[in-house]
Length: 160
Image (cartoon, rainbow, N blue to C red):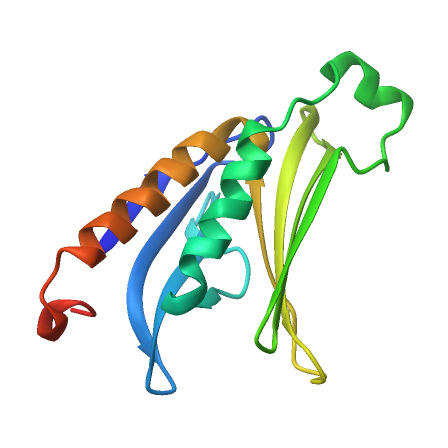
C-alpha cells in the first residue's frame, strides 16, 4: 500500500511517500520525505517508522494538529521561535512529538509541522520530517487513505 504526493511549501519543493512495510519483523507505517534539488529528488530526512498498532493514535494526533485554531499568521513574526502547537504521543518505547512553528526560509516565513520520533531509553538517532502546515490536511487524507485500505486488504497482501 503506497501513496506519494507533493507537499510543496513556500520555500521548498517536496514530495512525501506514505506506505506500509515491514521493519524488524513488525508491520509499520513508513513515511519518507524528499526535497527537490536542481540535480533531482533527494531524501530530506530519515524515514519515520510507526508500528501499525500505533498508527491510529498517530493519525489522531495529526488530526488534532490539523483541527487546531492558530492565531493569525501576521502575529508569527512577533515570536518567530514560539511554538504555535505541540502534542506528544508517548506509547510503548516510542515518543512522537508533533509541533507547529513558524520558520524563516529564502522566500519568507511559513508555518512548518515538525514530526520527531525517538525511542525511550536509547541514544538512537532521531527521525524527523517537516511538512508545510498548509499541506497538513492532504497528509492526513493520505494517512487515512492508506490505513483504510490496509484494514480491508487480506493479511497475506498487506505489506506488498
